[in-house]
Each structure stands twice: as C-alpha cells, then as structure tokens.
Image (cartoon, rainbow, N blue to C red; front, side, top):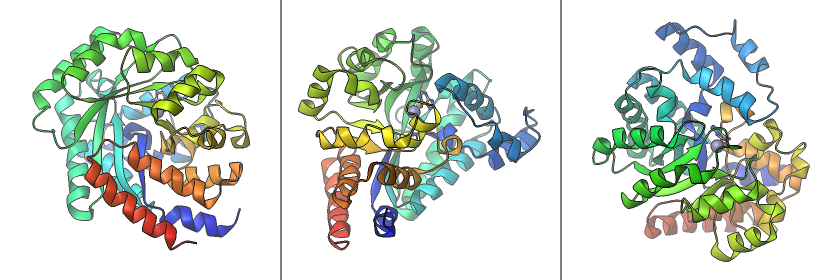
Length: 343
Ligand code: HPA
Ligand code: ZN
C-alpha cells in the first residue's frame, strides 16, 4: 500500500475503545517490576518472554497475561503501566481512550482495589490535564469466575464511585469466553445498569453469535467487544446494522489468537462495507505485536482499505465512545479538517 495512506493513518485523530491496560505491559516493564517487587517470573530474559508469545487460542494467551500481571503491586506500578500506554497512544494521535482493567486479577493476589483505581486514574487525569488526552476506565469482570465474585467486585468498587466519577464510566466482561455465556452475568450487569454505568461485553471473539445476542438482550451491552463472529448470523448482522451497534474489533489480536489464519481473511472490511459500525483497536498491544496505528496499518494493507474507509473507521471510534455529544462534535470536526487536508 502507498506510504500516503500510512501517513494518513499515523496523523489520523482517533479513539481507542478496546484496550486492556494489563495487556499493555511490555516485557521490559514486566522484568523491572518483577525485580522491584520480588515476584518470580518463569523467564530468564526479555527476549525469552517475547519468544513465548506464540498463542494458539485465547486461553493460551490468558495464561501468560495473568502470570505477567502478577508483577503489578503498588499504586505507582499501576500509574507507570497506564502512563506508558497513554504516551504510546498520544504518539499514535489517539484523542480519547476507554481502557479496561481487571480488578479481580489483582485482588486475588491481595492487592486492594483502591490501589488499582488510584494508579490508573492518576495517570488518566495527568494525561488529560497536561496533554488534553482524554481517558476513561471500564471495570471488567472475569467471566471464568462466578457471578457472585463479580458482584462482590462491583460492591467493593461502590464506595469509590464518587471519587472516580470523572473517569470510571462502565463495566465490561472479558477472559475465557466459550463456556461462560453472557447470561451468567445478568444480575451483576443489572446492578451496574441501575448505577448508571455504561455496559459493554466481549462476545463473538471465540464464542458463537448466540453470545452476541446474549450480550445485547440479557446484559444490555451498548457496544460489543470483538463481535467478529456476528457474520455467521444474518439476522444478527441485520440487527447490528439497523441499530448501529458498534463493534470494537482488534485485528492483530484476532491474528495472534488464531481467530483468523491470515489478516487478509479478516471480515472487518466486509462488515464496514455492509454498514456495521466497526472500529479498530489494539486489545493487548504488548502481547499482540502492535499498538493502534500498527493495527490500522496492517489491516489497511491486508484488506486494501481506501482513504475514505480509514477515515470512516476513525469517525466510528469517536461516535461509539461514551462522551457527551458536544465533545464528539469537537473531535469529529478535527477529523473532518484533517481528512480534507489529506485529499
Ligand atoms: N479476550 C478476552 N479476554 C481478554 C482479552 C481478549 O481479547 N484480552 C484480555 N482479556
Ligand atoms: Zn479484549
């Protein structure tokens, strides 16, 4: 593809809506924190960690992802992790981030949920204040655990609601999908909905289209994370298109976790051309080989996206975000000006 389109992508104002902050832990930081916190790692070097990143499916990745996250212990660790990601996002011309964090991964190791909130929020606020990069956080429940544990997690976060009202905007659902359908979390999502939190859920990454229906109808998810298997169900595709339900797609993640064999087989362009509100995101960039611009560039090359399609993906990313309409308008105008200058 022409370097002209790569340039378009690099400067493109965009939002990232599907990013697990624990998945932005680069091996260098993993090693530094392991040493500082005296957490043993099953690797001898940074190169050995990177060499281990050959996944055959979601579970084979999750095993390493949870092991890596064990090096995070203090408020400063969560701050450093988040700050490092936000600097990369800023370099990729991301204007707004809605990141996932998995409190259960940390509370199960004895880390207080307050430490997790405090470190992530401090980095989000600092970036907003000093650089105008907007950031929010979405508390994700681990679906391989029980709904009771998810409810206990939400309840433990309740006292933090006011203190973090500016950044904590929603709940999500991640981890091992198959065998853990959305319905399992109906009650905890109802509680979150009653609290006025936004609702999203991973569905249709490895799981069947029925899980996407479940996320929409049982959990009232406003966005679907991944959702690539929707294409197997014509009625579902119709619904996503009719109702304008956004999908936060993560192409390099899908490639690394063998959801697709080759990026050229990815259905993102087909869904886009059918009027589905797809967006491009990086998921767990430290593990999957690239941040958001790398995802845009690899996808644009593999699927031969044109300039209008690339700009449309960025437009959808702002429209699908959970910020007030006036703020979306500001970013959409910036995007329109940028795109017009690129003809
Ligand atoms: N899918 C499910 N759970 C996850 C993922 C993912 O891609 N990344 C981190 N947790
Ligand atoms: Zn994800």
